[in-house]
Image (cartoon, rainbow, N blue to C red):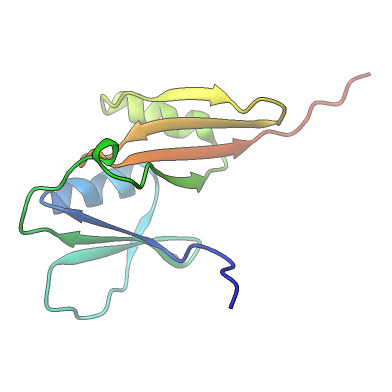
Length: 128
């Protein structure tokens, strides 16, 4: 067996609606079908796939910096647009070029302290 891709991430939260709104309104995911589990949650989709699962936690959760899992990363088409929405929502966001590549990345936290990374590949400008 060989792993080919990450299917989804699951975030446990005591802030279910706030977290759902963050991923939908700021990051641009869409809410979609979710099986009829016997606990509250949301499945959030990108490109027709449910890539973020949210579940209501019965206890407070710790931020990523207190976990062995450092962050989750997503690819975006327009990093600048997402950064504008993050800043408008009062979220700190650090943007960096990736040395030796045409990639830029942004790091920030969701409402639960989950550290996230966004990656954008920029077209290489022709010189001439």
